[in-house]
Amino acid sequence: MKKLALSLFVISALFQSCSNDDDGGSNPNNVVAPATYEFTRNGSSTVSYGGQTTRIAMAEELVAGFKKDAGKSEQELMAMFAHVESENDFSDADLNASDKSIRSKTAASTDYFSANTTDANAIKADFDGYIESQVAEVFVKWDDQATEGNAGFIQQTSGTIRYVNAKGLEYNQAFAKGLIGALMIDQILNNYLSPAVLNAGSNVANNDNEELEDGKDYTTMEHKWDEAFGYLYGAEADASAPTLSADPFLNKYTLSVDSDEDFSGIADNIYNAFKLGRAAIVAKNYEVRDEQAEIIKENISLIPAVRAVYYLQAAKGSLDTDKSSAFHSLSEAYGFIYSLQFTRVPNTDGPYFTKTEVEAMLDTLMENDGFWDITDETLDDMSATIAAKFNFTVAQAAPAN
Image 1: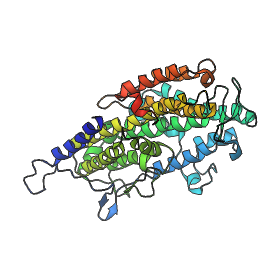
Image 2: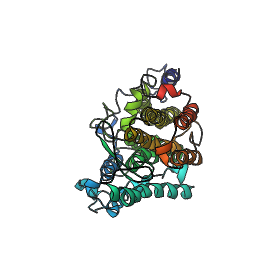
Image 3: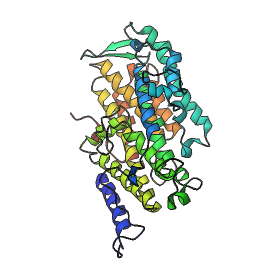
Image 4: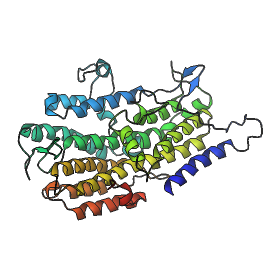
């Protein structure tokens, strides 16, 4: 029913924007989405999101550096996180030449953090801490077998080796999955799709008059919408035909959720809303634009919630038989739960879970000996709490038996 409702919302917005078109298509409120996310002006593409593509690539290389055999020191990992233009922090010369950084856009949205630097700084410090702790706690125990209260490696029954802290947490998973919320989701939902950003300054007047940015083929409003698009599709080889397997962040997990029959269609809902919203900007129809932004907020917010419950439930099946596998699932759940504070309830100014509520759940996961003594009851209770906020059931998000 939820998927049907969202689909009808998209159809309704399109129908309303195209109705009353008695003058053969000259109605300025007529909005028709193109078949794919392709927009041109005078024969040139107006779509641009290079900064998002760059940050996704930086994040991939940084997460890979959490392995000790990558040979990275704490200082090198920190430099990758807070890259400075022309520093040799990455293997890719183009990334090194860039003036972009991951840290500068972490917990940096206009709606959530422009007036809340205390939380913004605390969240950045969390990610700094994952890097520091990986080096100080895990790298030094790389060759030691992890036991309750002791960091080290732990091997799955499949043979895969994981590296955990004293409570069983993989810092690389906390960092990577937490970044999905703190960077990708926050920037999409609470920054670039915000009317405070889209309508800032003279953006509306300039878009109405098609006044382009200096030396560019796009208006500022068009570009802001594209930048939101880029945090989901920026690593795609061809964003007009996204595979949703282009990066290990929001892109990948949009596919994961869409592949669950209980949530199938979410990928189309998001992509279609991005297309129609962008077309609405070209048509100068800001009501349709904002309707599409709300659709995107609801659908993208669902992704970390579904995956958090998925991994909490996946861990239950292996806590007694394969602790390494269970700890890996719990580490991913930890990161997705962290990401819930960056979600956005449509037509409101807040997330589904506050920072305080998220921290309470993470504290529950880490209390006492952390994953080593966590119970199925705790995982079920947490799963139910998350699912209830998003109006799905634990069974719908749980792994198939």
